[in-house]
Length: 119
Image (tube, rainbow, N blue to C red):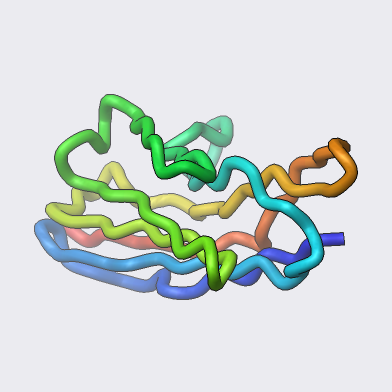
């Protein structure tokens, strides 16, 4: 099993910045993609950004140019730098990782961290 521990959420004013971190606990597993999703009240969970083990990234159109996803493979940690935050970025942010061994991978989720942007 892989546990994902998130940190860095909080309350920030519109235009401000936050940095989320997510560390995977199990170093014996190979981690493939890592990603951040978010879920606002009453809405579905949507992909925000994703990064491959090689560093290739992809972003939701709504965050392009404002958010940056990165990872430290040595620490099994993924980051989400969020700049120019808007009220509509308010949501619970979840870390996701595809991890496994012996060629068998599963999807793992963090517990979520609240990001609130006040206007």
